[in-house]
Length: 174
Image (cartoon, rainbow, N blue to C red; front, side, top):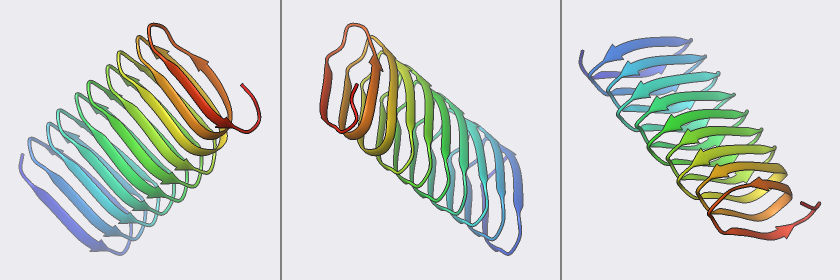
């Protein structure tokens, strides 16, 4: 129960906390954060990262390998991932950019936006818009009651209801 700040760790890090923010920067190995009701800010992690919280924002950047985020009633914002990104959330937006691998987002009642993805993007949400821009691989979207926009993507497979669909610059078909 409290704020946790760690930085300049040569190896891996594991943090468990509740009711406080967690900041973890410059981690030499893998990072695991399990936080309840507190913000997570992770940056410059050389290994894989697993970030879990609820009712608070998750931010990550400069991830050396894959990142996995599980959050509830949160916002997720991330950039510069050298591996894949797997993100689960509800009742908050998910924004991720500059991912070298695949992106998999499963959200409920939250906007999803991905850009500059060098792998595939699988995006699911409801009652909110989905946007995919500059995706080198296939884009698959399953959205209930929300709009979908895909621009400059390899291919697009879209399923939605009660929302506008805009596809532009789809290279390989739909």
